[in-house]
Length: 118
Image 1: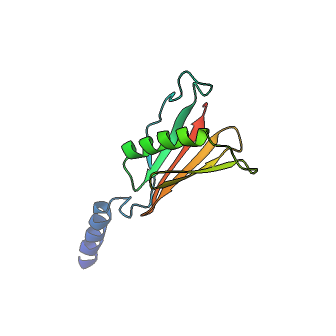
Image 2: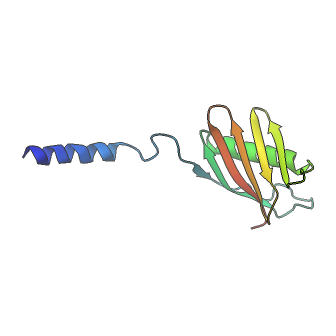
Image 3: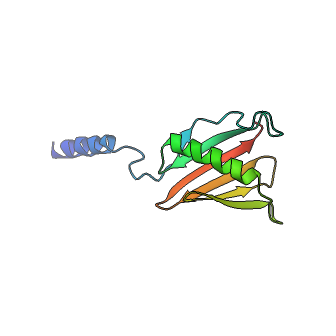
C-alpha cells in the first residue's frame, strides 16, 4: 500500500510542474506581416519568431526595429550583418534564400526570426 501512495504522490508532483518551468524553451510568436509596404521588400514578412525570456509583444517589436536597421547595413564578405538596437545585439545571416536573425540581450534573453518571402 505504501508503494501505491508513493507512486501516486510522485505522479501528482510531475503533473504539477509546468513543462517549461526552467524557462529554457523558446515560445512561438505571431509573425509581422508586410512591414515594408511600398518598398522593394514589399511582401516580405518576419515569421517564425521565437522568444526566450521576453514576452511576444517585445519580441515582435525588437524583431521589427532590428530588421529595419539591419536592412540598411552593408554585409561583410561572409554575408553577415551585426547591428545593435538598444541593449540588443542582432546578428543577421544573409546567406541563403531567407535572412536568419538572432537577437541577444543581457540576462539570457534571446529572439530568433526569419525575414523574407514564405
